[in-house]
Every structure is written in C-alpha cells, then in structure tokens.
Image 1 (tube, rainbow, N blue to C red):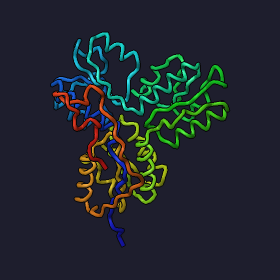
Image 2: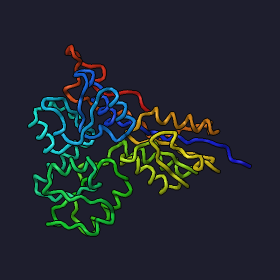
Image 3: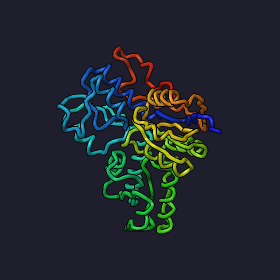
Image 4: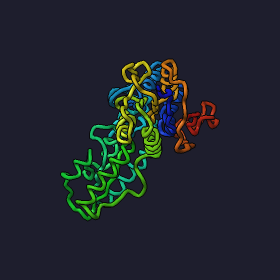
Length: 329
C-alpha cells in the first residue's frame, strides 16, 4: 500500500531579523535618496532578493572604489572591516551600515580580545565576507580555522592566551566539534562571552533536525553562497533524511527526487523570502503533496532597529518601519 504524500514544513525558517533589517535598509535608502543606491557585496546571500533590489535601482559592487565619489553606499549584513569603512570615508561616500547586530557583536569581541593581546581562533570559512570583516578588526591576532580537521594543525604563540570566536552562520554541531578538538590541544582556550552562532541559524538547524528524522527527502530553499542554507542540507542528511537538496527556485526541483518519496521536509535559509517557499509548496501540491504539517520548534519575535540614518522619514518623523520588522514565519 502506498504511503500518503505529505510535507513537513520546518518552522522557524526564512528571514531572520538581521536579514530583514538589511533588506529594508536598501529599500528605504532607495525611497529616501532615490536610485541608484550602491551596495557593497550582496546585501544578503540570496539571488532572488538581490535581483529584486537591482530592478528597483540598487547597484551591487565588489568594493567601494567602484562607487562614485560622494554617492550613497550600503554595507551588507555580513559586515565590513575597518579598512573598508576607511576607504569609503576617503571617497566621501555616504555609508549606511546594514551589518547584522549579531555580527557587530562578534566584531566587538575580536577588538576586545586583541586589545588584551589574545590570539583569536576564528572558526569560519576563509573568503566568506563575514569572516573577512571580523578578521579585519584584528588581523595580527586572528587565525581562521575552517574545519574540525584544521584544529589539529593550527599553531598559536601562547597557549595560555587564546580564545575562539565563530562565524555566525555555521553548523552548531561542527563548530562545537572544532572547539572540542582545539581544547584538547589548548586546555586554556577561552570561550566567547556569549554564543556567536546566531539564534536564527541555531533555530533553523533545530527545526530541520526534527523534520529530517521522518523525511524521505528534504528541500532547502536558499542560494549556493548562503552558508546557513548549505549547512541546513548537511544537517538534514546527518539527522536522518534519506536525501536533501538545495534550490533557489521551485522549478529546480527534479522529478526524479520525488520518485518513491512519501514525506518531504521543506525549510529555507535565513536570507530567503517566504514567497519562494510558497512556490515550492505550490509545486509539491501539484505533484500530489497536499497535506502540509508545520513542525514548529521555536517562536521568533526579535527585531532590530534600522541604521540610524533611516529611522526617520523625509519629514523628520519616526518611520513606521524603524524597527525593520515585517511578518515572517
């Protein structure tokens, strides 16, 4: 007898408070200053969001030297190093910092520990914008540790003065395994004053762990350069999903993935608008997966204030979206 087709919809999923704040910062900059508004790097790691903002007049650049002198530039949610801030100032740019406050917290930790002459082992991925920004706060004190395997080879000057920090979008399990291996070599390794992996990354991983145990297939909506989306695929496989794939859009789902599949888990990374998840659900419904059960493991109600330049409307009144909030799952 065929098993009934169903979807387990993970919640929380999609936009986190930091992403919401950053996207609204670009939208409001376009409203306030008019097009074009320049954005250094992708404002968030999602191709759909970037394309929509480009259509509204945002111009995405790799570095601030591509921005005309005196223009408006938004720094992405992933943060920038002091060198980038300085370069923008040198060009007379009007900079709006949309760095996620949770990333800013890690930056401040790096500055503090470097000031106290600690060596900082930054767990993260070389080349990721967030890691570049954090490391740029204290380049002489930071060593990037990319994986648990690298914990065996990293060297420090003084094992009695070493601390670990992390990129905010990593796999919680893999990060703690890296820390465990580092502590075996450096018993006096200090922890950060508070958890660096962001609440949204952790919540989405917890939700997909619960879904994965019952799923024949997990579909993660998110872009390939979104670290937290890629991690969700890995976590789903580690926790029992028979197969897991990442897609940007519903039309990337292959029919062969669905063959013989009764239960499909669906989630999305922290930079993914809910409309993309709904398109996946619509396509799955057309394929016979009409029963959708939400699997909720946490409630999220955090909102961050917008950058100070954007908290008031053109007339000087406090803007209705000053907190950067909008409805999300």
